[in-house]
Image: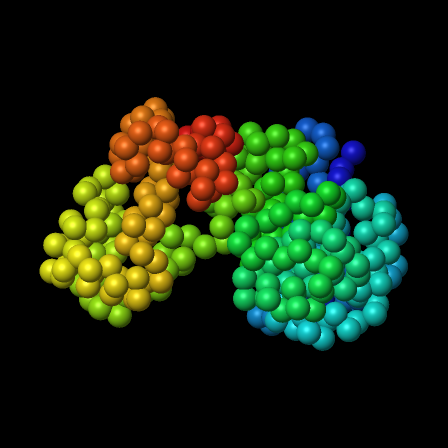
Length: 320
């Protein structure tokens, strides 16, 4: 039997919020002999529904869709302020959520789940730009703007746009195991299934771009040479500044102290090494500049919220 996935859209929806998860489920369906997926699309009024980029999809009328639904997935879009006022949309989501094994949202689709009362007293995430508004509007929701996706009971929420792919891969992994999720990711040539606790922000996105050209070059040097001496004295010398002046200017222009930036960069380097090599943990620790497996474990847990070994087992590609 197929697992029924109903994706709810509306005029002005974000096309990638729908297309990314839909392709994950469709690819998984091709790779499994049973327990695959059948994807359907519905909207408040059905028919041709324009996405925010002008393309259209054909949808069933939400109010005419009968349950049960295995996975109810609600997308986001820039027209969300108008959508939360649409009683047909919100009511349809609330009705079908009662028949669904699980409910999920992508990006600011979390607002529709919240409006339907599905996020009350739950932890949830959304696009980082919308997180403050979500928390202000729905006081009963515990909003965390950092993770890629969050599972709270049978309700899943995810961050902006392409994190919907990560969410869908996580749902496939929950249904069929991480090996199938890896196969789907490889087939779609997307980033291997990332853990939900991982931050929405990559290392470059977490920091400001320095105004100073020497500091921009130094930032690039740190990211490219994690195993080098990246102590404040060494970096200050490379930047041609006193240690005190360097620390102050670097922090002002990047938003992070030199030590904090170096640690985050090395954690990112360790993550890449775990995913694309078979190096033992002591080698990963050395090549990422973290020194020892103990330090690797401590830093990795702090930044990626998973142990190095678990990350490798769950997210490493089988083909290198």
